[in-house]
Image (cartoon, rainbow, N blue to C red; front, side, top):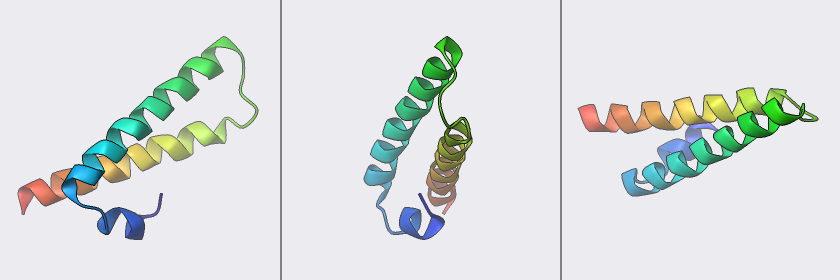
Amino acid sequence: MKQSEIKDLSVAELQEKLSQTQKTYNDLKMAHSLSPIENPLQIRTVRRAVARIATEISKRELQ
């Protein structure tokens, strides 16, 4: 998910997207620990998406 897409979402949508993305990240980590997944770089991409969303939420809370 790109930063421009994140900025267009409301706070409620960001919270929902964050929970979905964190679930995806945890599922990928679990799948990779059981047997190596085909594209391990996908874990990095999802982890960074979680960080982007969390950063945008905290930035809006400070304003």
